[in-house]
Length: 217
Image (tube, rainbow, N blue to C red):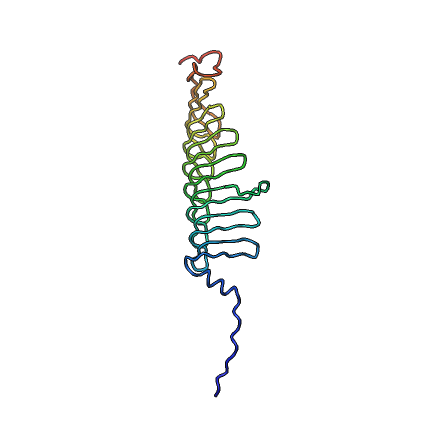
């Protein structure tokens, strides 16, 4: 009985691309239907290794490490400035499971900046935050807010050192009124001083001391 040979069906082009993408360690550029683009290394069919992802809709770009399809390792995230048409860096640091984790630096609008530790995409651990008005907080963070022990320095150099909870002064703390040459030491609750002692502190060097010194007890 004669053997019947059927013509081989033409293989779709995407099959070839898929095979290439699954070659470990090789760099390829893949375009999505929505206009997104990835250029970098692959493992199987997942982004793995070094790579650059561009999101067309958000005008954002990530360049750094990937692990099994997610941002994991060290990398930077930037967005496109609609005015200058240049990329502005938003975050540079460590990632885990597609979220900020470990030490990193984030640049906010209005020239604000955070340098410190992250966990699950939130500021957690030790960190320093520079605010738009010139004040600066340095200390412990918990779930994106100051929590634990920390120091807040105001633009006029006055500062608070002590406990924090949910982003507010809480627990034992000291507030240095260096402009007046005074120090308040006491207990705080939700940003409100509940009890404590106010004494003169650096009164001679203070730029605007009170008219009368505080009597010693």
